[in-house]
Image (cartoon, rainbow, N blue to C red; front, side, top):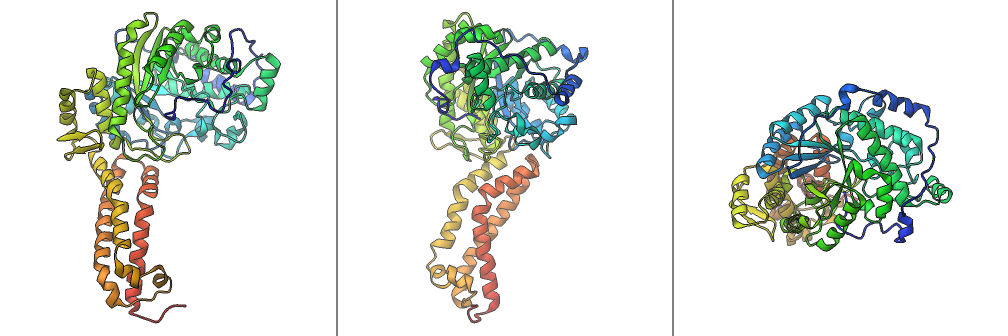
Length: 535
């Protein structure tokens, strides 16, 4: 996940030399360690059947990928089966699947997978369902930064760029590349029909700060830009040599400050395409134009863009701000419509990102069903070249709403899309749970006078006074418990138990536990029937 700020890499020097010029020497490879090298050989040795990707012609197709960020709240396949037809109907023709620990890694890599990871059959089923709905599947595997799901394990801790932080890989340890080859091979061997793979490669935090990197910079008179490109070149070369015809996508932010000459010399432009990502509503389209020109000059043949339909407005955001994300698409439309200014680079497509966590360690942001109205607005705006009344009417029809209020981020009507029950119930929890409990427990003067924290602590109270407010509080408690029970069953139909528990812990229990404890104490003190104070 990337923050909405455009001033990236504040932790790194703004000195251009730090990022590099053309012509740096490449460090000679160190001898590979045997364990991981053997693993890589086993997994990545010649496999004629896996080497040739199914060839499809997308030369005249403008791709619109919906990003599924599975590092949090990964939906069950049964829910994806319901959602894929809607994505297709809304105008998507592909999905960008960021598996992270939801992929069924096996053998030496089994450590990486979540207890709730998809099975191999699930991966096959997802691709079948995608094909049925004419959605191209593009797997995303992080290969440099944002690899916390790998580096959190003791087994791989020694591959950290900075020992204290699990964010980024150390590119100087030979085992790093061996491990990535194994991971990429396991993922791609299950995606032989894919035309693209996305290698992430964004926000490689702390690159250049590890001792190995400092030594490399000093020894080779290099810089972080050259170091970055050396690693990416190895990853890209492995992919294109191992899987003929497979095209590589990568986030562009790390390339923004690297010189054209350095990118040209690396050779990555032959086989990779940068994906320019900007998620704010009114980003500087002129700045984007400069990046596009730079990437054309660097030798890239095609360029992709990335907008966002959810997950970029705060790590704990629970409700998707519709207007914010609509404006982001409208800004991207301006860029897309001006692509004729760049005849030497082709616009291939846009990914609509839907971040589910800012990173592996952060809380969940908006659940997918909560983000679907925003996704519908964003996709249809891109398909129709703007958000007109006709577009709005079409969206309302597809989602089963009567009206949309962009400023308030609300939709009137019950909704008739997969997960609409969760959408509605999250709206009620967000808007009413905290307030209604606070009102029940804090605004009643009888509670302040006869059922204070002191009374509860010492189990001291007169039922005559308690019954003045008791029935009201018990009713609020009963209503919310029934609602939460229903909500939990709706969540369980879409998500695995760990997601259900996490969402409830973060968004429901802080308020419900307060109410539950109050009711428990109330019932106990009523039962004691005005006994003396417990000291």
